[in-house]
Image (cartoon, rainbow, N blue to C red):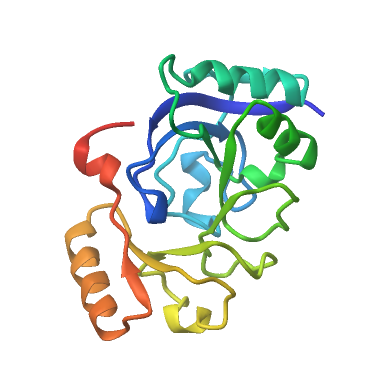
Length: 212
């Protein structure tokens, strides 16, 4: 299959348990909870997304005919002199599990990468993922019932964090929703984590630092 990718770039992971780790981000095009078009946002299942995942015109983006071709492009984004740490590719979107398959995970591993995936959890993850982050969305059915970490954007109407208490993971992160109410949402998330110690606060460090 061909893989449609919005952008490929090297940066530091800014969220969750892997915060601060150098990584190549591979942002896949497309999502099953929103078209990415502003005119469709109000009626989307996920209407607070702040990411452009439409098309293949971003930095390093394109349509890759094979898993090897995409893995090669990702490897080229890892900087020279990066020895001493296992390279990490973060597969994100949009929704990466619409395209990520076992052929691609095998190709990433063959290229020497550890694979992290950020998904909304509505699709089952293929074998070969080293670090799986599930970020549930209100009104969307969770198909993936386990992960290395769960990261909930907070608050979401009709999605109480405690309704996820039975999810199979060892790390529960609460991330304040961005937007015009970001300060209030941060205060609410902080208060919730204090009252419910199962949850850890996750901040979007890349936005605070002004990096990609």
